[in-house]
Each structure stands twice: as C-alpha cells, then as structure tokens.
Length: 192
Image (tube, rainbow, N blue to C red):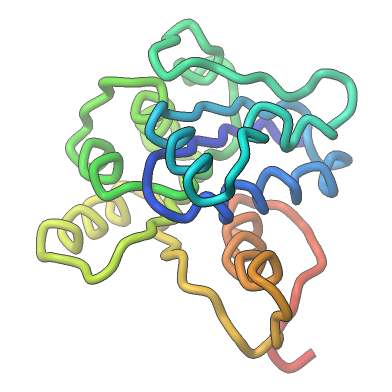
C-alpha cells in the first residue's frame, strides 16, 4: 500500500493528468492515500484542453476517502513533511517553471515543497515534463534533478502498442510513470 502525491501544473497536457487519475482508481488495492495538488493554471488548462471541470471528481473512484485535494499554498498538508512517510510523487504534467524551481530547491508552493521532501527523503519523484524543444536551462535542470535522485519522464508517447485514441496514447506515458513510481500494473511491454 503506497502513499502517493500527485502534482498537476499548468503545462499543456491535461489529458495526461486525467488518465493518471483514472488509472489510480484501477490500482486502489495498492494505494493507502493519494494527495492531489493542482495549480490554478492547471485548472485553466484542463478547462481549455478537455472542455470540462472534472478535475474535482476524476480519481475520486478510489474507495474509502483515501483521496484528498490540497490547495497549492497549504503547507499543513501531510506530505509537506518527510515524517508523513509518503512513498512517491508524480508531477503530471510538469511545467518547465515547476521543474526549474524543484531543481533550484525553491519550495514556494505545496507542489515544489512536496517534491523537495521526496528528494531529501530519497523517495521516488517522477516529473512528467511536457514541453519541446528543450533549451540548455531545461536540460541542466533535468540533470540536477536526476543527480538529486528524481526521474525525468518526458510525456513522449510510444506507438508500438498501436493506441487507438488519445487516452490510449496518453496511457503509454502514464503507465510508464506509474511503473517508475513503484506501482504494478498491466501495460504493453515490448516483446511480450
């Protein structure tokens, strides 16, 4: 049973966040708690890209009240401290600004504070970055986070599973991010 933090930033790619939250409901036998933090920009981009405001209800299918939503400035959230023992954090999609603040150790909101906690406690931090092309600052930030123990998982979908729609395409990235965060799930594997 894992305690998981989900950070959703204002980068384009809300479909990745939605698919991630949907998949968590399928993995509830592996989940103790999920804390979700979503920026105001993330809500705006979600409305723009997906045409709805389902971000408050998606992922609630996990039974027993094990999903909690936190405001971006709520530093009393349990995962703002290493003593709460959260196992992993996935930031999806992760903006370059958020990645830069994490790389610099700037904990100016709950997402960056939780990421800092994951790194200092040597727990899994997976950043699903969604931007292209990268400039040298982005590449150096990715290097710093990788050296600190984080995992950069670009939102680069794969096609060898022959996805039939956008959700299946997004799943190729989300399945990978969930595996990297330590979850067991059935997904396409090359050669099987």
